[in-house]
Length: 405
Image 1 (tube, one colour):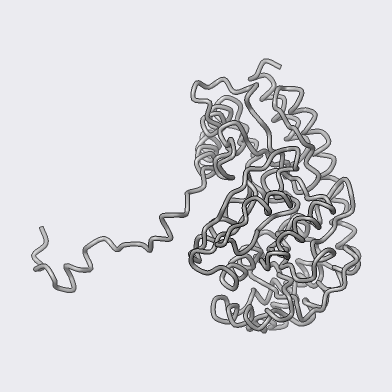
Image 2 (image 1 turned 90 degrees about the vertical axis):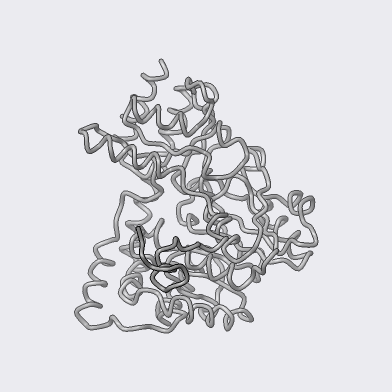
């Protein structure tokens, strides 16, 4: 028993510290329960096939790796400007011209410590306490947590396959209130792998612009588009804020590097926030990323994009054949969002229990819908095809035998 009298520093230090209220509004990742269970099975010798994590199985190209080594050997490891290396900002601007046919002033580009840091900066700059921000349901869970972290209120708008699980002009018209400040959407989306069509994006942005709101467009999977050339939101509205990353198309997840394109008038505000919150992105990663835009690197990324498409083209029909419902073909990223109503045999009708059941009986790790919103999450799972096709084929075979297909 403590002998320190109440009120003394030692007694005060022994009491549990209270976390800020914002922490309580951030939900845990349900996927981590699947990941923990999968790791436990693997340690016991089970051959686990992971279709849970949104991470390419490819790594940085040889040119990128060598550029990092060269930067280290040259001592190019000190702080950069908070907005990023000028050469990298110029290279990104050139990439917009070649890949998307959009002219972007390099001064509008802000290099960030991953797309997550970019989204944090955008919310810090634009979201005040009490502001409402519209986003489709389902969506990437961290998007709503970024809004909540700055006192805003994420408003999840149920979407469906007919609208490609995306926010529409009609959604903005119907759900905008006096407290609404803007929208956050991702195209292509996590978890659905679906993109907004050009007209859909244009009409939605027009509805936001008419109300003087902001639009943050997450384009981190833009490079992984399969059925049509990718179209950046910047093509329709120069005042949108786009978020991108070197993690997905450029296969540099652990390097933690991304970027924003923001209106020129907002650059000083973003720069001030970046200076105070992050100082600068990783210098080594920035020097390495310059090699991403070498023609040899781009050629390899395109080969890998075609491989992702090959996996998708096998997986979606195969899932449908064993009983999953996939109402709309994903056209980007590396995810399939599937309805399990026809194959779920557990009594709870809960996708989290379903995923654990599938994992325990087949060794295939997939993700429950609970992480991605409130629109029928118990009926949905997300499957990632960021793994070898041979492993995907084996996973489908195992699940098919479990479901009697």
